[in-house]
Length: 239
Image (cartoon, rainbow, N blue to C red; front, top):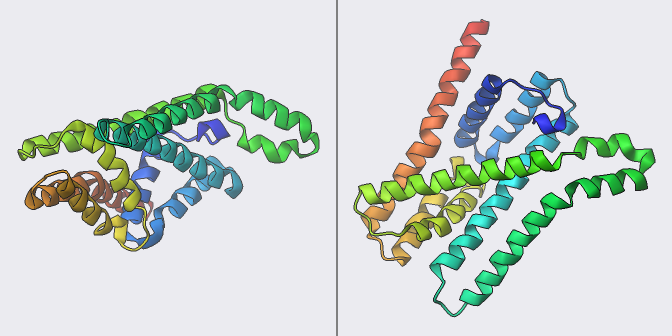
């Protein structure tokens, strides 16, 4: 948010994220994102346009890293398969694309400002420094690998014989399937995808279902409960 001149203290940023997650998990179609945009606009005193821009940038960078993990997982899981060379080429090409997007970000904006001087005020909200962009990508990558490691530890705790490389491939698919706006917080759709894929990799049905349930409980229900508690607490304090 700071990259778009939306100055919000860390405490308030944490509050709006967990509260919006609570609403996103309790409503279809990810309504929590709309709540986050309104909160950002009200707290940082920026326009709705710039608040929407922050939300889009956040999701775009998160999606970019999610694809990175998915392509990496394809390389690791299908390394000896007939499509191993294709997956390796796709992964290397995508890594190159991410690096180029960071290196050429500032020159792109400089050229855009020169070409469209009359519309500089409209373009400036899109400006973000190369350092900020790389930092956001790095933080997103770290958070996804933490999530992957967490799920792998869960599988080891219940004695499921599943390698880490499979979870590098699986977690992005779980995350993407949970975005389908047909259930509350993706529950059901994400679980079905998880159980199906884990079963394909040799996991017992009971273990696959338990991994899915624990994944949802730890990463969705617990943050949602925290968000609801903080929201009600703040609302009570205002009254």
